[in-house]
Image (tube, rainbow, N blue to C red; front, side):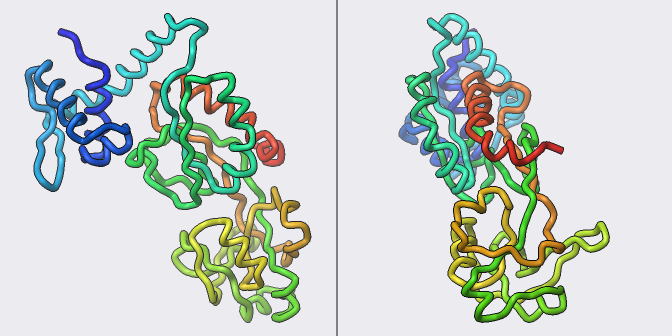
Length: 299
C-alpha cells in the first residue's frame, strides 16, 4: 500500500487546525480539494481519520495515531527527495513570524540576496508584534522576544536584550524627570496591551517588582509603543539595542531601575524532524540577526 504525500500533508494541516477552511487557506488550495485529498487518503488506508460536522472537525483514534507519526514521515520523505535533486535545490515554502522592527530592519533588506541563491524557495513573512499561536497559524519559524509560553515550539535562545527606561524630551519638559520610584508614581507610562495592567518593572535588591502606573494610551505593537513615547504620551521600557535609530528622540531615565532582560528565541514548529528548507532558513536568519545577536550575549 502506498500513501500519497500531498494528501498526507493536507490531512496533517486539517488535523492540526481542526478546520478544512483554514487548512485550505494556509495551503493555498480550494476547500473542496482539501476535502477530496483527505477522503482519498481515507480510502487508501481503509479507515476514517476525521469526524466532520458543520462546526468542528475531530480526529478519530486512527487519525490521532496517524497524526503522531506524520511529521517525522513527511520530514523523512522531503529529506529523501532532496538527496536526488541536482545540487540539493531547496523547494517549498517557509512561513515565519517576526517582530515588525526585526523584519523591516534586519531581515527583509537581506532577503533578496538569500532568495537569489535559492530561487525555488518561497518565504512568507508575517511582521507582527502580536503573539500568535504558531502551530495553529501554520508558521514554520517564529522569533520571540520575551517569555515563551506556547508548547510545541523548539529552538534555541540566541541572546537577551538589556532593557532601558525612556521618555521623550517633550514629555520631560511637561512632566519633569523622575529620579526616584516615589517621584515615578506621579508619571504616565504607555501601556503595552500584552501586559494585563499598566506597570513599571524594576529591579529591587535582586528581585524584579512591578509598580502600578497610570496610562493615557494602550497600544498592541512595538512600533506604536515607541512612537507613543516619542510623541510624549508616556514612559516606556524598551530593549537598549537599536536605540540609535531614534536620533535623540528618546532620553534614558532611571537607569538604576531597569526591567528584566528580554530573552530572544528563534523557534520552529517541527519537533525533532525539521525539514531541510527550515534548517537552512534558520541558519540564514542567524546571520541576518548578527547585528542584534552580537550585542546580546547568550546566557
